[in-house]
Image 1 (cartoon, rainbow, N blue to C red):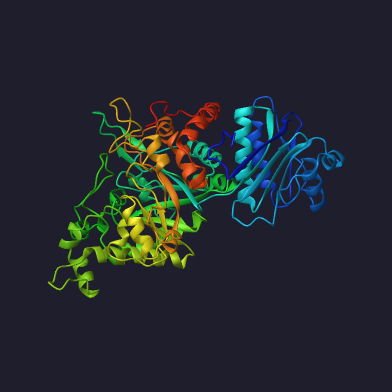
Image 2 (image 1 turned 120 degrees about the vertical axis):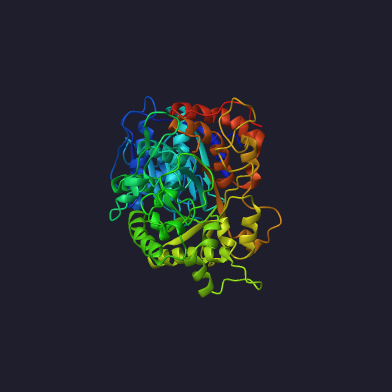
Length: 540
């Protein structure tokens, strides 16, 4: 294709000539695309020698066609003749980039980018597509500078869900760093930010009516020191609003995760009575953990006060996050406490959760508990996400399943009619794993090379067409047990996140690892310009 973009587009055609970005240039957009125009202007203003890019008045239908012809493209994506292009006047010599919607396009986020000596045009199915096209233009400007080669790109995503997760519970990352990652996500055409906010090690989200959650759960003793030394932090409502707004401008949905019923030690630090032991023993106490693993004390599923409390928490969560989804965890919840808890056993007796031999069925109790979480979200117009363990006791079909323990749980979920996001830890999507198996590389619990990530496909072989339709896409996950600083997070994410972005966006038939590796050399220069620390070692 002669294209060095990442992810690789559906179609890229080189054309004659170049276009010069320069001072005094502005972006002109159809009505309703003012925010997208401002974002593109911001991105291009950061290119050396371009200067401040302005925003001109909104385009009307007639001027959209005029600018399209001036740039050498018709409204339906076809080229016009050089004679027509030469005759078409440019409405404003300082206006060099036009943005418009094309109702003839059929796919969400579809866009067409045309660069010609007379100007640049981005047309798209929707506003999100405008931003995807703007990200392509940003990539070209980062690698080519002010002089852009003429081309025509037609492009659209393979999958609707193209996500990345950052674990901010094990270690805290500032809002400014999250904003940097959101820009990098937009550069790679990702559209979901999964924000892991609570775990055994911290509760990071301010809940206005429950200040004790962050008061006792957001900071923990750093056991690496002999002296008293706490580490941590939390996100205020203003922080959340800032992140959500920043992401929305890039057409990225923010999905918060509130872990239940397991991985809840930081919650129990302020409410020990919500554990099975704490309900009967007023002297039981918890504090946020400073080591990692699976902990026996989880939320008590037999305690109605736990359900009422979570209902109140979700009031605030749903008010802060306008997206369709809230992730409620559901993974790694040991059941030993439930099997010895009178309240949990009473709940299982009342719900008929015993096998023929009389044994209790705690997995069904977890499914019931998670079902109550889902109902709370449904009442607020949200849809629940759960890790793939929620399948084990049965869960309602509108639950979105994240398949992390390999591809098999996702295949099973899709075959049962659940929507699925694939994010398997097995040499694919867990970017806290080492990038290469040598002692000097950071990472733990596994090895995932760049080629491993690139060779992954969210749709496993053998799925029937109707089952494959339930695979919404994929997601990269960065857990932060050993990732203490943003620079480390960048190193673990890149360039594997570049590879996964191509997996999630590009047609399967366009993907080739050797070609990707060659394109990565140019793309690495873009990361350098954006001050990203990335892995530079062996690729496989």
